[in-house]
Image (cartoon, rainbow, N blue to C red; front, side, top):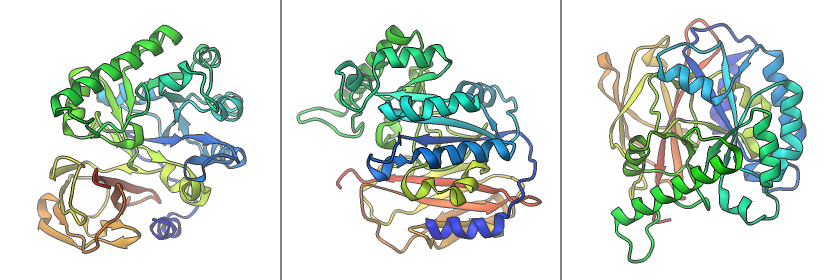
Length: 344
């Protein structure tokens, strides 16, 4: 990943040119602190650096509701639109991020797991602090009651019972947020970024928007039950690479098969159909673990390509990332394929 981003930095240069305002980027943060788990943390100094970069380079930081409503209605969004979001409800968001975002007058969204707040768990905000943030215009979204692995089936539980349990958990968290803050936007950030086709169908039935943690930009063509976000923690919070993500563009892309991110295959193939855009298909590159993935063009005229990796991937979650340079500017189209192996 770092090699891919370094190559994009070289191509990107310092100039960010204008583009039709039909794309947006959603950023995902967790801790804003120096003494929390590195994998999900950004230091307060580095977070300020992100905000200063967005301000100094003419980005439009907008609310999540503004972005989603505009895209769902087929409207436009401001040039270089960026949404800032946080997951979980950690105290550092209130103590460090909130004052900075007020200073910059930037809206943001906070996705809450309600049980740690109800229990007064250490390192989390209180409902009083959350009501203060809500009154200041912060959007409060849903992150389930207790941050579950949504793909996990409990002992003796059928798939139907799993979905019924998740539905009850989702609606309970939404009701708690409504009672405590007066807000109910029906936005769910998937805990750990995990979901399957049945969960997405449940969200659609309940009129929820789903937000994931696989990287990429969003547009009117995006899947509104699995909107991508760029996680910015650890090495991925470094400004030299984060700035490429701030200005990313969304492919018009359809995943033809498989339809679910859940797999038991450690080397899964995927077939994608790339629609028209201001890029050349011959410049499309797809990667995993910073290595190029072999591409088999099934129909180049219609943009259908099969990714056929030769490496076996480890861990519970991994991604294939596809990028292409925008013609006439220094921006990049960006799409990622999420994989989840629940056996790990």
